Length: 272
Image (cartoon, rainbow, N blue to C red):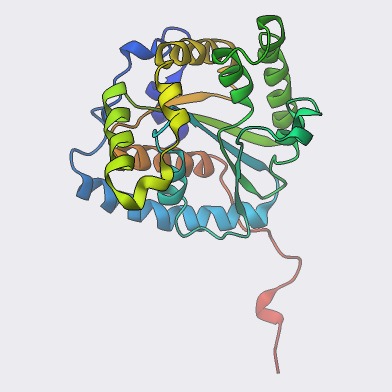
């Protein structure tokens, strides 16, 4: 498979841009059972491990995956289950929480830019610079005249990264409100998950419609051919993991990676 196979999941004008109409349960090209999906995911782990090693030693490009979604959509779980078995030397995660005082003293992209990938590195953003046009907008942290300019900033920022040989893929993990309620309740009912619950999740949930409106404008303004957004139906965790893994592997396969050629004949080397 190459990335063109996943065009149906692309978000652009007239396609998947109205989130209220986008199904968050698995689509018809995904397996019907968790066991079948996990079997394919295991095969993809093996393929991803090989491709990531080739990408690391090839060092011609950088790769950035952005994960966004409502609370409980599974950003951490996606990272854990999709990138299992890769070499940690070449794959890193950056999580962007509420900015610190020091970060707020800089421009909002400062903390993000310094975490972008280097040659041969895969970087995964768990939340990202998009919070500065999502949370900032919904929670009225800045005037509209401020955050509305940021669509242009972000497009220019991502274009800069692409011009410097960074491949960017952005995932929106799409769950419905009923699924979020079930997952939040699990965090209260299961002692081992209590630590995951944050009262601020309830506040954000009360602003569900405002967040979806904000996301829709984000997609309208920032889903570009050089930095596309994909919608990932995420009500079923196993389907979410498999689809993201398929797209990640397809992205790397499209690069036609190979190990660097050496300037000597290995068969002529004798080790005493």
